[in-house]
Length: 114
Length: 116
Image 1: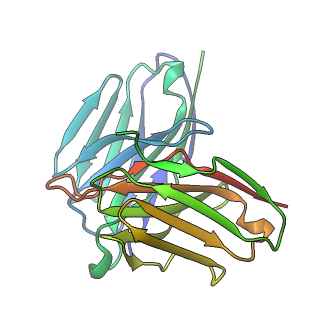
Image 2 (image 1 turned 180 degrees about the vertical axis):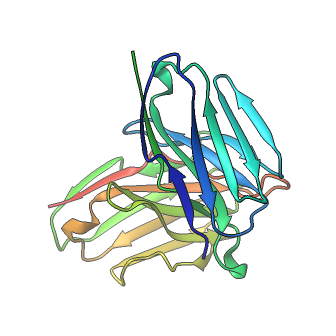
């Protein structure tokens, strides 16, 4: 069964600083998703990473995927308060008969402070 | 498209009562997922459907929980009888398997359930 880990689980960072969130997973996967959740809100898809070495960027966020290491990173550049949210990585997982279900990591709660 | 629509947005009920949560997926999507989110357990997949057929319900916590998808545009998650530990936010999500994106799920706004 797929296991997804994220670290850190909680992150408080100053505006203008850079930081990286890590997502490790236990079984081979050819795609990985990153989502954002604002407090009290729903989840919003940020990135879909489809292959080893894939890199996607949107504004101050950049996500990458290393399928050999079973690792994805979400890098935050020059953080601003608007980036405060919880970030989840997710993968298709489970058994061969239910590969298409999406399993989420525990989330990283990011707080950007002035 | 209006996105995934869930109702009600908030539900407060007494222990022992039946609760029914509703979901309308995005038109054309053939996958539907029910998730539960709590502080303690995070985001848990309860059950998912493909083409209205339940594929994996291994995440359904107990027999008190049941889910149906009578047609492509409607699904329900029912808890009977409800207990205080069922209090959580329940999300419905839908997707359409496309290559190469797979099942990138799109979420509804959630139903915040409080059982007192």
